Amino acid sequence: MSDSKIVLENLLNRRLSIIVKGDKMIKGTLKGFDNHLNVLLTDAEEIKDKTESRKLGTIIIRGDSITYIQEAE
Image (cartoon, rainbow, N blue to C red; front, side, top):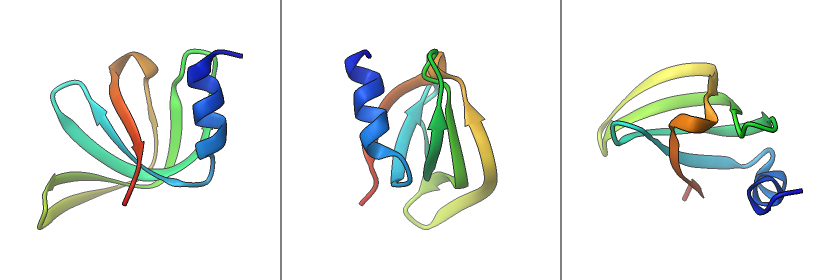
């Protein structure tokens, strides 16, 4: 198993902040991922700034569009 998959395995069911191409931030709860590092998030929302967000619900983010992942604060 690759290092990336091990990290994601340890983050399952935790709230994450994910930066995708275009410098967009998406926060959500990691429910799954696959071999291409596509991720399934629930309760996802796009964060536009500290006071504005947009609810997205359950989404899949393509692994090749992800630039950074961390556990949300």
